[in-house]
Length: 294
Length: 311
Image 1 (cartoon, rainbow over the protein chains, first blue to last red):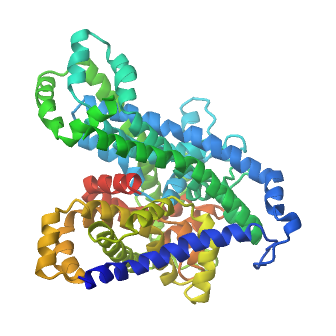
Image 2: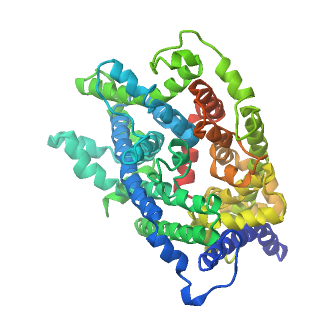
Image 3: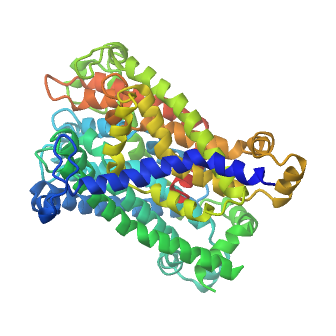
């Protein structure tokens, strides 16, 4: 019996080592570096009189401010994917015909790299040869030249993100809708309640857990958004489409400013935790509830 | 009892198909105006989702002369494979112009070691955490849960230093190993959740029979893991193939996967852009995961939702 205690622990050592070194240790290392004056190479002395200098600089940096603003814009814009996903899921769920066909079509963008997604939308949004010139040749005066202008470039990124992820939220919502007891539909039908009111007053409140999960996954995805920005605009025009992930990697690779990049990375971690803590609380609450009803 | 638990218990008890059946049959009889409206709306949405794919496909077969006419949605006048040939054999990434085939083979060589490493590590860890009495298993699981959400940027620099000191930075191995490391928390949680539902009778019988950790793992657990293995495999194939950030960070100049080549190609700012070449390159990069998706779409859904929810 002694062996049966040692073998599993031995089997866990690689995973433990990876967690300790690549995750916990590395996070500590980056946090430490954010208090140093490191530039191209790490410097491990901390000047305690101004340990927060990287953060001071960061909060005064216009590029960081743009990044944070874009993060919020991207988050609100991508939330359309949840709304859209719910509408699609509700329709597919109510109208059984073609369920697997529609699901396949709506979900395929998720299988493709965001770099490919970016390449495709970049081409469609091309002002002289893309959709704009086509629609204008039909006589519609539309303005799709989003990518070239700083104040609209984020819309293009939002469009590509929504296109890519709406199917994913649809799949989650569909799973949630399938879990709803069908007696509700018959009851509502008997009472003569219109369908849209059933959705708004009964179905959506019942699915609040699914909605919260989607919202948290969306926020985490938005914080990580990097590929789509690189592929669509590469941060431009100017700094107008910078997001924290882009800012951090840019500070490290283009500006070779290690301390500064570390401070930005720590702020990303803080933002993630702010989103993450409700998730943990929710999971615990959900589990308690499940045990209570059992 | 709240409403959430009603729906959950309905799902758990498997009532859904039973109570749904009569509803389904009744609706099938006639097609109501509302059904038509819904189907029309869904079809329009489906078309919107297909527009980018359609545009990319037709553009990749066009000549540059036709592209300059500015009619993005028209079919090619002359179907040509010139762009595909160029993208595969001669497209430039940085200063080298050997085409996307370099990146393709790099991606393939990253994919396989990374799959084997990440999945075997996660299987063993998930098994040990789920079915053996390890005292600190709970704490470790919680830690893994947190690690699964950590943004990559916060561990990026230390990982670069580690791969540099072990002299694998800039090689395919660095990219493959980092993929395995970063996927470990999520995959372990997925496997652990799957294994914890294995009946205790099976485990205690196995313990009586041999009692050896590795024998139970290879003779009982691995043969039982078929379903979850396929789901995880699909999840990982698409994740690794579609990754850009890890490839560009750890691949250096020689270990770049296909997505990095593609990104270099489309973000290039000098000279005139040949959109036919770009779209052919984008399609070449998208084909492998799309093939996986259209072959086993249902499992793909399971994979992404498992990765998202349990991760």
